[in-house]
Image (cartoon, rainbow, N blue to C red; front, side, top):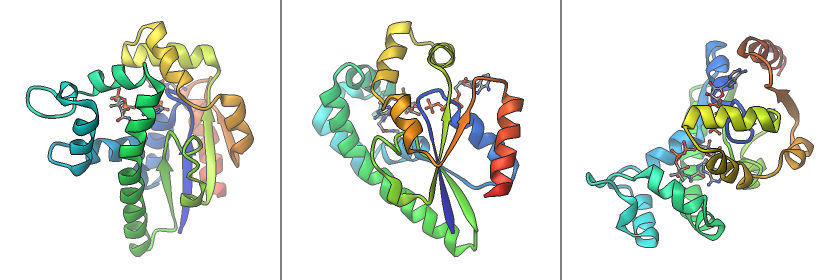
Length: 195
Ligand SMILES: CC(C)(COP(=O)(O)OP(=O)(O)OC[C@H]1O[C@@H](n2cnc3c(N)ncnc32)[C@H](O)[C@@H]1O)[C@@H](O)C(=O)NCCC(=O)NCCS
Ligand SMILES: Nc1ncnc2c1ncn2[C@@H]1O[C@H](COP(=O)(O)OP(=O)(O)OP(=O)(O)O)[C@@H](O)[C@H]1O
């Protein structure tokens, strides 16, 4: 079974691309979703986060207050690295289990939507890397619009990730997404049926 690693900066269009690929029949494994699952109430990963960041990052009902944690970690790089150290091993392990399940079902290929594939050097988990990218202005405006971030908040998140110029050198396939969703679909159709 072939694993296609779909990556790209924040708000570059990975989820949009995943929805399109799903329409083509692709099975998508979403790292952001796995990160949410492993930090659900009662999960050992959430307990580790509480130990490190305190109970202030919880809502009244004991679930993770993502907004509060996001504010802390995207303001302090060393705290972001600490959070990554806690969450990423659990996400990687869960992803590998899901790949194995798909393989056992006889799937020929799956897509791993993984925002930090390059930052975390996860090339050994995938067989090929597809990079979605947009220019900086488009990235900033789509991010501010989608998440309601101020310009400053959005820039902090973009800056927490590997610069696009470095990412472009590391991909097997690069897919530019400055245009319309229809244009993105056209590009993806070609690559999906080719590979
Ligand atoms: C800090 C958290 C709670 C903020 O939650 P929030 O709902 O605001 O963001 P969400 O999880 O939807 O992520 C949105 C996007 O932010 C970017 N992002 C998320 N985590 C990180 C990180 N550790 N470093 C750099 N960028 C990140 C990604 O592009 C991601 O697609 C959350 O992002 C988190 O738990 N991050 C650590 C886990 C992680 O690295 N997830 C990414 C893939 S495993
Ligand atoms: N071609 C496009 N034209 C217009 N809007 C788009 C296009 N592609 C994506 N968008 C919008 O841009 C925003 C970011 O896209 P999306 O959520 O797919 O990015 P992402 O890479 O999955 O982000 P994240 O890293 O935060 O998970 C969304 O609001 C989405 O609807």
